Length: 320
Length: 268
Image 1 (tube, helix red, strand yellow):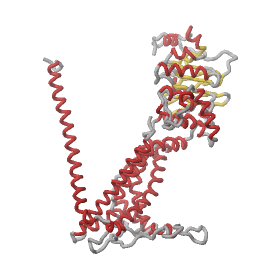
Image 2: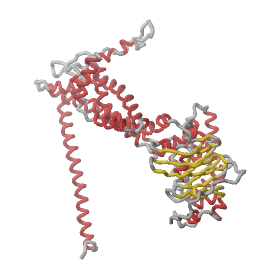
Image 3: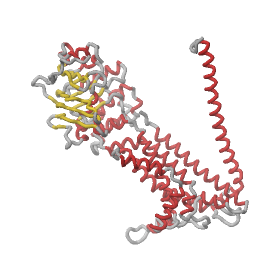
Image 4: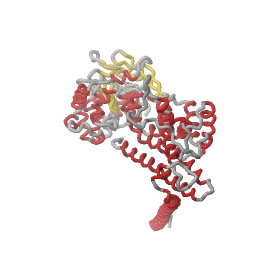
């Protein structure tokens, strides 16, 4: 009879069910393919690099002999560069995000800044390398140092931190803000005591996602002149004996030069080390590359695990 | 339903001898170019309950939120006219809205406790005012929770998160948060609309107790609620204040036909 007769509706339901189930199957397939490829690639790399995994690999400098070559300078470099990146990008990015979201008047200028910050997140990293080469290396004379590298990567992830901070702040509901304002709080008190506190876990997640991107960057660091072969570590800031902190007899009694000498040291980082080994003709070095690549993946995964932990930790007790 | 015969300005006044805590005078309010309140006059008698009633969208909440300058939080809002809190015109540009909010407390439609402990929720209203000794905080928090009829229920679990409380308890917590700083005027925006009848009843009883200490201005969508415990009632319609008076008189014989229609359920 008509399209709305019980029989027609029933047969229609059958087709609707098939379409519904069809998508579910398609989705599972898509996920399976993506995960499978990733797993195969990762495990292949892990298995290839397996013969190199030993304490010595982590504690040796690179060498001409593949079995003796290690990643000591690379992982120390990566950690130090990340330290500078975090120190620069987190306060700058979060403060900018707070200002833009909470304080800035909504007008064409803030719209313009918003569009540009979002676009900056998509600028190729090599461009940041060129910018840093001009600004940090040549104009400011900071050389191819850990400081330059850290600041370059900080610039690179700054837009990510700003954008995620804004999104996290925006997620705090209006009625909580109004409740705080109604008690007679200032904008800063509302921001600091409430909005920032409740969005901290999301902000941290954004920061760590940014760092995960920075830790794998190679191009901008090669541009600023990172070394590919380095057989020494930066001067340690602390002394091996008590009282560890480098003291001097004169005011301010702290040897700042020694404390911050590592900032000006030349460096290499994990991805550059991997790239270097892959490009060598001796096939045995490729095993080193696979091993170092696995370590790099491990570092990224550790950071992401930490992000998940933080999210759970800070989310506890926050509900509205 | 437009009644052209009825254009004369309504008389909005209280009998002489009634002391006023606050008063809106020829108040206009604009969301951008949209004039939402039209020459509103409203007296708020001291230490009495004044109820704002009227159909949805008539501007009751907008009017209420003028009394603590809540509209200042969003761009494009504009006031014209005056609201006097005692002698001070709180809409004046020279007056800092924070100063106003320190004297005028507010409770919202949905319970909105902070995601903090029960204690911190109440203490926060004092903490924003500066460093305050713990012993004094403790004393004020207990006082406010007692006045909000919540102390006996929460005294053993002050450090637990506020969201472990029931909806009605959360709303009483919000009332305690507003009371702890001893406001002169308490604004309530349909405080029971998200609550069940029993919780509503306990909040109404509580407000009845409170009116000896603080002037109360309450928006309600329920005429029964207004009739039950307010001393004065104001009826708003399409952004205008149509009638104000002693609750008993206003409900018994409203002078404005619109008020009568609303009260008898023919409008809104």
